[in-house]
Image (cartoon, rainbow, N blue to C red):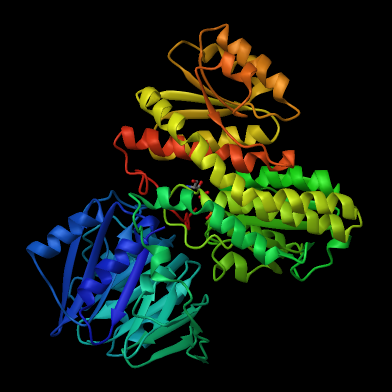
Amino acid sequence: MCGIAGYVGPKGAESILTVALERLKYRGYDSAGLCIVNDGDLLLRRAAGRLRELEHELADHPISGNCGIAHTRWATHGAPTSENAHPHKDGDNTVAVVHNGIIENHEQLRRALEADGAVFNSDTDTEVIPHLLARAYQGDPVAAVREILPKLEGSYAFAAVFADQPGRIVAARHGSPLLLGRGKGESLIASDIPALLPHAHEYCPMEDGWVVDCTGQRIVVCSADGTPVEAEFKPIEVEITEVSMGDYDSFMAKEIAEQPEILQRLLDSRLRNGDLVEPDLGIDLKTINHVVFLACGTSWHAAMLGKRFLEHYARVHVEVDISSEYRYRNPVASGDTLVVPISQSGETADTLAGLRLARSMFMPVVSLVNVMDSTIARESDGVLPLMAGPEIGVASTKAYTAQIMALYLFALQVARAKGRLDQERLNAAILALKAIPEQVTETLALCEEVVEHTADLFAPASASVFLGRGGEHVTALEGALKLKEIAYVFATGYAAGEFKHGPIALVTQHLPLVCLCPRDAMHDKMLSNIQEVRARSGRVVGVGAPDDQALADLCDFVFPVVQPQEELLQPLLTILPLQRYAYHVARKRDCDVDQPRNLAKSVTVE
Ligand code: M6R
């Protein structure tokens, strides 16, 4: 949550940082600001609201210089006002700071600083940092940063510029992500790789405890006690087109459309000569009898499907835990348990805390992540990459389908390691997987017209219910989450068999119900559930086979989906019309699909 960026080099920092903020705004977008060091002064511009408000402010009151820091905020402490927007400065204009994370002992620090004469201008936890730095500063910015670190509790990645140090940015990290970028005579810092482009050619993720001193010519790293650290830089492989919208009207639309290509890429990396490529996960899967999935939001939904896959193929016990619950329980650890965190960003604070708890109990950890340089990836014994490319829309779409496919492949790998998968079943599974990318393309094309038309009709409805059974219960939860988060429609998903135990009381002619009813083992049971809804005048949207007449007869509309060769993979296809439905409803309701209110893409605070 919150994005930070910094630039020092020969070019105009203001325009580079504005572009960087544009690329980081998925991390928070309720206010933004930047500070340029110029001629012994710290020039600050901040604005509440979306990034365009800051751009207006910069157009009205331009600033320029070759060194600066910038921030896009997701409010934790203090409302999203321009006073609370970062950067924050000390009272004497010595230093300006941008920060991502939470300083948990900020109240105590603030009281002590106020007693010492500091005047605070914001309600943020962050503002203690510039006041502490100004007091510690004796002409050496790195020494000042190192001096204050022991006083800070909580998580942070912060960057500071000093008025009398033009061309220099100092940064520190503890618990929140920060990357260093190196270009030709220029250095950058940012919360994520896209914000380093196109100026940096190489990058290095900072480790906890590092303090970094950047000028255009060099990046010097040391640990908090001053010991020099050799930072290893790698080439940046992300293409600029991967972080641009291209011809689409939103990243969400682009990312939904990218799914066939992404799934194909993932499959190509995991299948060779008709066989499964089994990545080395650093553990002996044979010994695993128990798997615990940890995840939040959409990734948690994917985990529920992972449970079905593992139970089916590998016959191991599987628990699916919400990370924020797991981390505060006292889970039972056993030697044959594998903990599997699932996270698109690899930075979700609760999932990371769950991972650390598992490791503290000596359980092996294999994670599924999309961002390979993330903290979760780095702290795991083994990693299964999702290979979905940068996901920028706040609503997770392509990462979800990649998670489903990666979990299915993982289940096959575990089953094979445990000797529970014969060649015939493996061949059938591989055949079914190979057909998926084409089936995704087909389903997206097949459903679009009716999805858009239905969205037109139901967009004004203020609530919606999604029903499904088995794997489609998971699709119901995920479809409801998509509609809630980007269209602000109160939506809820139920296991259809549970519906008559209370929630059916909600049904009226004004309530749209989306019923997942593909031709699977639960098909006839779902038809009965739909009958029950119809008998109470509910409006039903079915999701199922295009030639399912029984379903069509019961529904106001049917979103057609292709049937995969393996029933377990059906949720990978049924979610597609629901992603598009949420997108269309959101657009009809005039919502910003990429930056829904109150949200941020990576939830890096608790
Ligand atoms: O990066 P992660 O997969 O750990 O993120 C987990 C959730 O925050 C995320 O899936 C969230 O629910 C999405 N906005 C859903 O679209």
